[in-house]
Length: 271
Image (cartoon, rainbow, N blue to C red; front, side):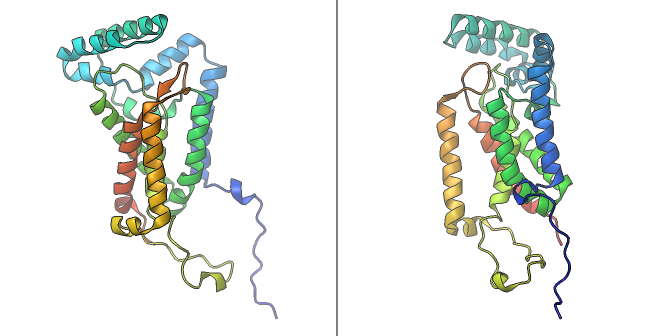
């Protein structure tokens, strides 16, 4: 007699079988960008960008009004297309004249993107690395980790670029936090004896790897080296992520990555 349990058939292709919270996150990011690109008038979109993007110079002036001259000087010293430079200088004067601190922008900037390439790039990595974190930690801890990464990345970006008036947008810092969190457990070899286990039996929960253990894991080391190298490379070259080519905010990525790596042990759900 066959004792194998009668399991329900899978109704979805495994590659699309993401946790619901990850699917919802991607839908929000893509939906907001589609709304900005296809529905909102330009004036409304600019207002949305000004009120939701993270602008380092705005925080610098709000905390120390004496930094206004530094912000105007930084905008005046930039080089490039004359029309673009004139627009940047005008925006810098606006930021100096309206230095209201907007605390929510440390999180809201992650909902906006500069182009379809930008949002698609982030959602692909979100699907790949957000899914294992959501399955392990649950939707609330997944969201808290992504939010902490966005805040940490935005804070580091402001500290390194206090005079910049270029709006920071993109979910990359939050995605980097999820990538760092996933790196602590997804690159481990499968448990011994798993090949002979019944297919319906859940695999044992993988423990989080410590830093020394990660450094001995060749796959994890290669992943971390490639991640750091690509961020350094993208930080010094321009990519078409918005209306014009701009450098990737490598510092925001780094801040989010460190936050996710360090915070996962604190919020990891116990079974």
